[in-house]
Amino acid sequence: MKRRLLLLFVTVLLIAVSELIPLLHGEIHVGVKEGDWVEYSITHSKTPPSKYATWARIEILSVQGAIVLLEVKQRISDGTQETDRETVNLETGQLGEGFLIPANLSAGDTFLEAHEDELIIGGVQELIYAGENRTIVYTTTIAGIWWDRATGILLEARYSQMEYSTVIKADRTSLWGTGLFVNLDPILLYILILVALLVVAALAIFFIFRRRRTAT
Image (tube, rainbow, N blue to C red):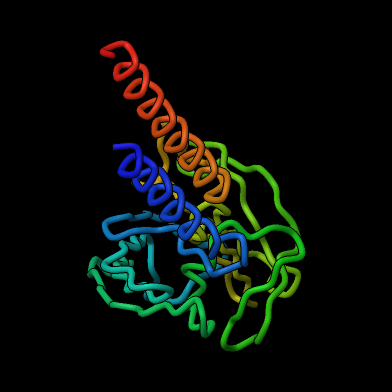
C-alpha cells in the first residue's frame, strides 16, 4: 500500500514538473484556445476610401502547437460582409495582420515577425479594453499596435495615410472574465497547481497511514 501511494505521489510530481519546464525555458506560449473571439470597432477620420471596413471579428478555429487558425469577418461600408481564414504561426513569425503574438511577453523580450524579422517588446502598461483593465504590450519597431499580454491577441491598431486615418479597437470579447486566475501568469499558475497537488497527495497519505495506525 505504501509503495502504491509513493508511486502515485511521484507520478503527480513528474507530470506537474514536465508541464512547467517548457515555460521556464522560454517556449512560445499560445494564450488563446479554440472558440475564443474578439470583436473590433473600426473608425475612420478625414476621407476614407469608397469601401472600407466598419467592424471586424476574429475567432480562433483551432490551435495546434504554435499554429493558430483564425476566422476573420469584416463588415464593409457598402453593407456586405467578408469572411477569410488566416493561419498564424508564432514560431516562424507568420502573424497575419498582427492578429496574434506570443503571450506573456515582457519588456525586452523578442518575437519573430516574418516581414520585420525579430521584434522587441518596448514596454508594458495598463489600459482598458472591452470593459476591463488589461496589461498590454507594444514593440519598439511598429508604432500604433497594442496586444493583450496574457493572451497575445490584438487589442488596438492605428494607421495613418495622407487621405485618412483608421483606428481598430477591441470592444467585445469572450476572453475576459472575473475569475481568480484569469490574468495569472501561466508559470505562477502551474506552480500553484503543483503545490495544490502535492498538498492533496501528502494529506491523502497522512490520513491513510493515520487510519491504519488507528485500526491496529
